[in-house]
Length: 275
Image 1: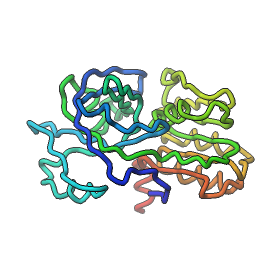
Image 2: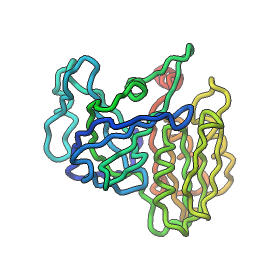
Image 3: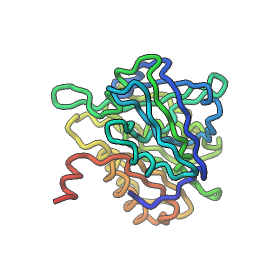
Image 4: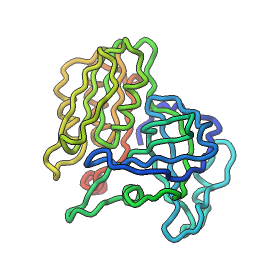
């Protein structure tokens, strides 16, 4: 994992919630809307605000959560017996309505060779029903743009699309820059509320056998300049994040002005790293 600055709460709060509705928002994205009596107090900051999602295991009658104080949740989580330990994954807030105490979570729907949905969280999301229990642990934001940034560059594969959408909604209206957003299919495009000075480039993968993030990386590598006073946010598959950061730094963008995070690692890359 890259060393990145995290605007993380010192005492993150856990919020219990239940599914209220679900919908397929595009061929590759499934949205689950959750609500809870305390969720209206979620300290939403906009941008790419993210959280740990805890899911009840299929055989459980109730969701068991770690008991902790401060920010030290992980060891108490591991202390829960494996057969009772909830599944944990990281997600960005896709939408938040404080008055309704509702939060939207977008899950990427990856499919295997025979069309089956892959990934425990995606399988859960596509089968979720109203009333299903879950919990979210506030983790703050990764986006950390300096106040003096002259331009902003955002690059992501589809796992970063909720973060991209949130960042664009939150940017000041006079922001200038560019977005390179990769998606699996043309139908996965969505309306993005970008400032007028931010150009949005959609990169459609088209070849289902291609490694996610590779097309966005190629598009980024076409850039031949980067302002030394700019800021970049590069997230998604690990190679997109690391190689994207390397390219931007070669163009003259200081490392401290690049936030990069490998949300996941493609199986082929993982095998290559282990070889």
